[in-house]
Length: 175
Image (cartoon, rainbow, N blue to C red; front, side):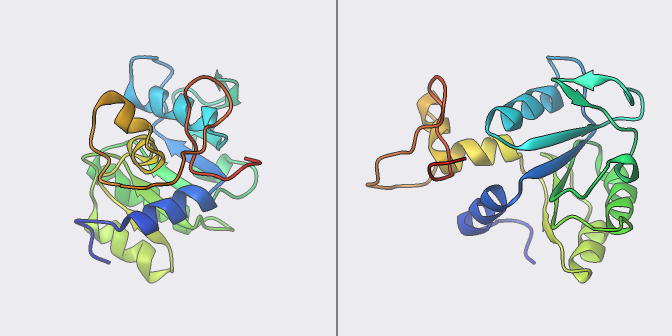
């Protein structure tokens, strides 16, 4: 796959199909981007499983934190990597070694590991690099436009609003 640009259709497909996300590199510090993304995804209905060996056994935003991917009970649909590019290789390998591998490996902004992406794609996984699911969700849903940012998406359809205050969703009614 060409990893410089991803079609909106692929991003939308991923964000509407995954339900359970392992977020590797989760932080308990509310000022950290990983905490903000965890909260955002939880607020959008995703089951986010925080992974951080230094916080294992604690709770983060009401969710149990695990020390590694293999400790998570049950399968996950997506592994989001909030670590550096070098660490993305071993994390991807751990994900590939799970009894039920995820469908998607998502590397956060500034995280790119082409060798890891190649290994994952060879096993049939979809890989997204150097992107943020929070930003992509906001862009696809149109939420990001509320902040004056061009989402590059034009539509004459009335936006679907999520539950709560000023929240758009990419899902139809029911989720």
